[in-house]
Length: 271
Image (cartoon, rainbow, N blue to C red; front, side, top):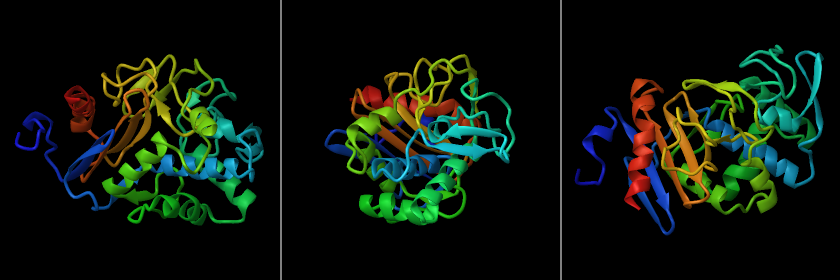
């Protein structure tokens, strides 16, 4: 392992990844190569919503009408997957704050609320308020705010640094977004199954007490981030001040489920 990566943890497909610690970044693969982000897009979209909140153009407690007028929820409910909306459709599957239903539709509803509040398309809003200020030159969203992004490891490193030391939103708002919203909600994280307490913040999954998860075992309970079905992830551990990003050519499957935890543990245990 001349580059420090054990052969048993080396992906058998094209990939790029980076491990970040204070003052140093370990990069593997082409850091400028663009891959689909799928649900890692939600991290960019969450930041776009939070910037609108920071600028007082919208509030986390603003009401949003969903499911063809059947229910009124808040922006906070939508970002926290606590609105009761189904995975992709404008259909209600649970009561508000009753269950953590992971919902692409909920994130899209949040993005449409920002469009109504700002007068921008959500893609243009994120471009102007998140991507350009952070210098994310390879990253874009072309379609759904829930999954239609693409980007590079270089850009995910810059995004992780923003999460570690926010410049676009206040530290107080960042802490709120990356703390558990509505604790104790049971629910399913696609690819990993159900949890009695499926811990999420406002667009960010939070490790909490999860054991059967993609987050490293060695990461703290306050670690937050997102993974995507394209075989992508970004996590940030605010306690160890470490972060890791991964992109690859193979969609999420058996290799990722088997190795992502161990891959993160390998780097955390090196420091």
